[in-house]
Image (cartoon, rainbow, N blue to C red; front, side, top):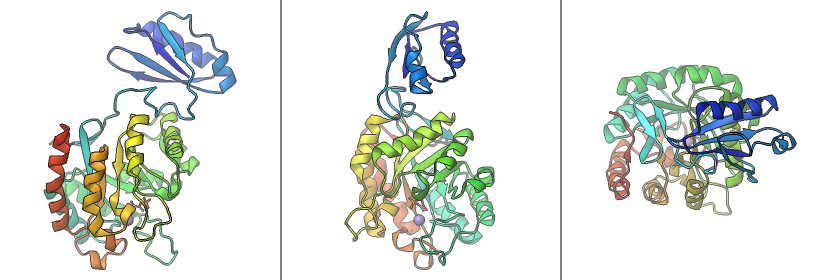
Length: 341
Ligand code: PEP
Ligand code: MN
């Protein structure tokens, strides 16, 4: 349920509504625009619906939201969420380019790639230290040593770092090193983990599950916002279909749909969606045209010898060439790479 306050409702009036909600055992989540405050009410349906809030001072309207997600919806917050991480910004007209290797492999590898993607204009550095591998015999990531190398490389070039939390038991340690916590496709509906990350105050990049509907993505994000974490970006990384030529099927309609349904930034990951290096650049361009607020692209200085996802990784040269083609697309609707620098 949403309580829409009148324009310029006083703080006292807002506090009064919030107090009533708390007394009834419901949660109040505030979304404050310059003029209007909307209070998202979360709690047991019977309790919430029995509250009589219409007559309270400053209340303009009480809206019953039938969608299963509320805080992530545009009804709760009309304006795009803008997330600031270090010197980088994502959301509204600020776009993110999150680039780096699939997994952290060594200091030399991480530094070489970090320098290359930074020079080409990326505003976030990625690299996995805990890898969700289909085979238990495949490289599982370097763990804490990998987090250290990622952090070092990010600091060296001045980029915030994004890395995956594979297990809720690692959340604290990953948060010590990372600026953005990635929830991988395989964990999108790990509700216990979402609850834990919702309590933390670190931005989260939530990837779409392998076979998750748009509705399920939004409900997963709702867990994070319900916990109080507002800095959440969604990531379309392709879904499973009958097609096997590409690793997954990049669902660009989902990008456009999410832009209408939620205020959260939407990122597209053509690397994992296609699994093929030659398809990454065209799908990056298409995703930006579809309205994505950013891209995640795997880059490796020696893709042939990459320990993970080499076939979909761009070389630094290919990445720089790609970046050159994306600026004009962003400029078409007055967007730019979101960097405070
Ligand atoms: C990744 O980004 O390295 C990754 C494993 O992605 P996904 O969870 O989308 O498969
Ligand atoms: Mn990968």
